[in-house]
Amino acid sequence: MRSELEAIVGEFESARDRLHALAQRVPDERWTQRPDPARWSIAECIAHLNLTSTAYLPLLRDGIVRAQGSKDQARARYRRDPIGWLLWKVAGPPVRLRVKTTPPFVPAAADPPGQLIAEFDRLQTAQVTVTRDADGLPVDRIKIASPFDARLKYSLYAALTILPRHQHRHLWQAERVW
Image (cartoon, rainbow, N blue to C red; front, side, top):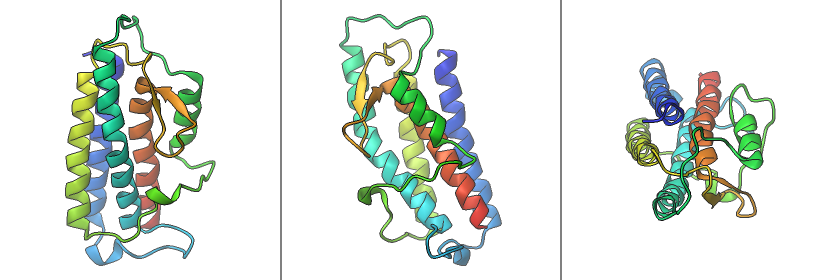
């Protein structure tokens, strides 16, 4: 697998490990406690990540199918497009720029920690599979529309780099709650 994609898989796996380490440290009853009424609890952070992954997976899978049917060849090195780079830059921790999420991605209620973690793990496995499926495809030439705002379009490769970075942002936030 190409090194750029291996790095993405590593970031997904690191996020999973980080969540499991947090779950071992934090008692279940603390998962729903907010540090401030305007901030999310640990459970809400993880629920938000699950909502995000659920929304992205069909877009990623469709992008892979389009890349497989593309006549373009994969470049020697994948690159993010300008919009994808900007979103990647602001998506990671530490949080320097707070962005209010759109209503479909605000968790309405949080499931118990075990369910949230099981869903996160299931979605991580699916995202890793999609990332592996991208190997050798021109994924930096295939555009997808953001599920947060359909006016924002960026490459499938950029989306693959943004997702684990976004996860680490909210895991950082969840760790700060604890």
